[in-house]
Figure 1 (cartoon, rainbow, N blue to C red):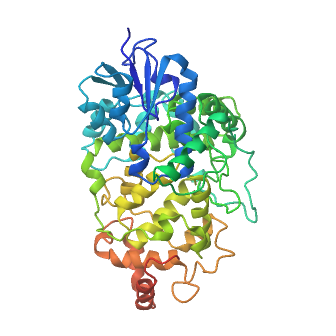
Figure 2: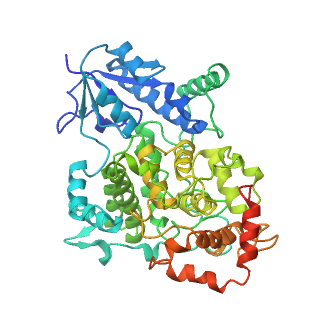
Length: 501
């Protein structure tokens, strides 16, 4: 009999069962384990728990008699029930904790990772060739494009430029409440979703497992068929308008033209190469402009791949980096996603989106949620855990570099060249969130002081000695010398503490 193959809950696409090139045996029996201990360790968003369990159970239903599906307290117990003391194969897991587990089991053979564009060894050779220190995403992205022949005209980049960010940073259309993009694909729930919701209710009632957020109708694909439909819907109807406003925010249009494919990619329902090749086909056929296609390709072949590789390359100690020595605990209103407690319209709007859906796009994540955490000096490890738990597409490998390196600058600049934070002026320019707000983006002090404007200057003051030598921060930091109300701002910032802004 072929060696049984173990599928984790984020390895659900057909490419994880394809033989050859380090894959499992053809027609190998499959084991899947639903381990309740995963949900005991962290207080996940209820919609995320629903999505993961629904996707696993749908995949098991597709595999039929080929799969042994075990519901157990732990993975070890599940393996003992399914294939005790029998050799197994498994593809390289996506977290260090899972890799430690499978590596500790004597009868498990770890096969190469799938679901990404670049093998670990190839990235390590590239990174070591750059000295292993400041590994610029732009350099990596161009290397991946060349290696996979993505968006190239011969040896030249499509449209004559590698980077079309200049065309993809427009503020929202003036006076518009929505971008007017065609609606994204939405799945329909079925009996398996009802079963999952029933089980989650029982876990909360009888087993003391707790969740955060709301579990409304499932918004994200749980099957390969649904994920392909979502990809087709995006490429055919939404990709063309994606680029220009990908960094903009509208209160009444949280989705805008974003693809909503991250959870499908991170569950393994889609392969990144098929996504970027579909987008490139749209450009070559004239269905989408190069700036929109390049922006989407950059998100997958650039940023997603870069984050995955850095998670492994930087090592386990990276999660403990705290270059700014931020130690403050996350406040209760943030932990509970209590958007109703927040006065600042930008934070209240985005926190409500996370509470209700487990998702918001990259700019609210970075420039609102992450920026506020950075300005308030919250513990980066706790911020990482929060993003991991509260987002449907959040996994350890996703959030560790994104939060420690990008959002919280806790690695001191190993991943990015400056901290990503701003005052209210940026929020006002790139969104429609400030107009009806009780706070004014131009006010640093007083009752109408914007928490982002005041927080930005307080942050720069607190870390002046570290940031002033940074060429990208020197001018901003020296702006502190022009503030006649700095002492008052700092007093108010201290008094404000970590209450809801």
